[in-house]
Every structure is written in structure tokens, then in C-alpha cells.
Length: 124
Image (cartoon, rainbow, N blue to C red):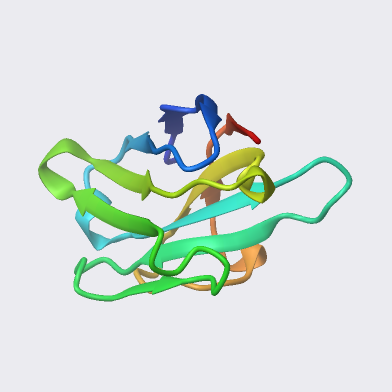
């Protein structure tokens, strides 16, 4: 079992920044791929970013590319999502997820464990 706990969400004005954190349990964290997804009210969960186990490979949704950065600290069993130049359309509950196979994906069903989510609200 892997447990994930997200933090860092909140209310920010458009153009501002937030950094989300996701702390994971599990002794083999460094071998997992990690993903960030978000879900706005009335919409499906959508892919935001992923980082492979090696941390050398990242991939972003077009909507957040050049504004968001995903990173990981394997010593702390933590993955981060730095969000800059936030827009009102970024408002959603943000979830982190683990893919045991170590390779990231853009589809939710390829992830094995999920956090409880953290709310991000961007005001205009």
C-alpha cells in the first residue's frame, strides 16, 4: 500500500503562484512514477504533469506547459508541482498519483494510488 498526502493548495489571484506537495509512504518511492491531475466541478479528471522514477523525464499537458514544473525529492518521498502565472481556469482540485511501474502516463487508470486532493482556487 502507498499513501499520498497533498498539501499547498489555496486561494490565489490570477498571475500568482502556488507550490503543491505530495508526500508518499513506501520504501521504494524512488522507483515510482508520479502524476498530477486536476478536476474542476462538472468536468472529468484531467492530466496535468508526470515525472518518471528517474526524475529525468517529465511531461506536461499543453495547458500548463511553461507555467508549471513538476519535480521530486526521493530522499523526502515527496513530489512537487510549482504553479506559476496561474489563471482562473486552473481552478480545480489537484490530485497526485503513483504509478508503480515507474513510467508516467497521461491517463488516470494507469495510476495505482491516489491522494485525497487539494483545492486550488484562482480568482480573476
